[in-house]
Length: 245
Image: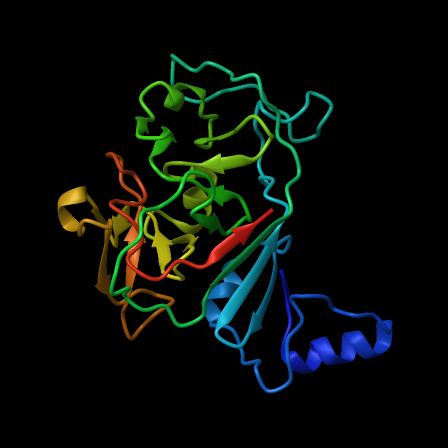
């Protein structure tokens, strides 16, 4: 992961003689991003600009999938457990995501609904979508197009997860950090320690507060579960940042 301090960024600008663009860090605004962001994959670029953490990603998974072109070294036919698997007609394509999320997330006084499209980003830079296949359309049928790691691409080739990203939880553990939603609050796997989390353990936004490995003082955080809404409930708990592509 390219993870830069303000001093390093200034040095890079000086050596390269280039303008860092609209996401440049202004003098006096920079501070070290939370250590938890070092968990992101090396392909994901992260800088902090004042109270905003900027995450840039190509959005492509770092794992095999039947949705890669057959010429790709990452192409692999479906070998998951869903006997009803049905390959959708789309293929994975590179995106240009820029996520801007709060560095110090806080509960929103007025909660906002999650939109269709990216509502967060996983540690490998893949977008996280909400529990709908379309406007108020459940994932009932779309689930059958999820590959062996629980992701799939939509019609523009944007690969994404609606449910537990199995490649990541296999790496970090079922109780590990998976990524962040746009409001800056972290997303964890389907377990708290050895206990499986259910919707009954979570609030209406699909989260709760307690200590985690990355946040020893405690923090509000979301969990994935095996039940709808899988990742997020009735909107963001905090004030959502933005995503562009």
